[in-house]
Image (cartoon, rainbow, N blue to C red; front, side):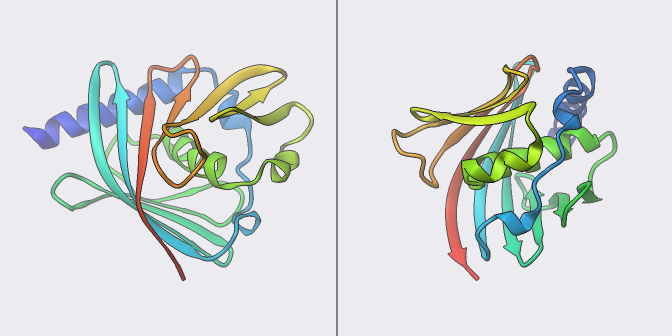
Length: 181
């Protein structure tokens, strides 16, 4: 029963991602080489969509030239594996109905948190990232598309919420540990 609820929530979140404006999908992800290498982290990720919440554990690793995210269900089974070496992200494993747009959004949330503001210049003049108090905001042509809000006063490795504006999906991420490689 839990597995069925999990698949329904993922399908819904994927559906939200694909029916929402595709502007976000037009943004090429940064190159992993722009992040400070090398580290791995454990994250607790909550995906809230349509009044339902899915909690996953995730392992994130940044190695030279590659960002990898692996998410596990509540029983510790691998659910999703994503890899980004530049260009289009690769979904290595995912349940039926998983959307490439959802993979893009998960990786974008990682980059929005970890990438220094000046490094976002690669995106072109239409795209801007600003930092306002405990928020980071991604805009295209002045229109807010993603808001990352840190749950503490400082932008640390602690909790953060990622709101995809105009979509019925909110990610909450808590970093559990981070280790240099």
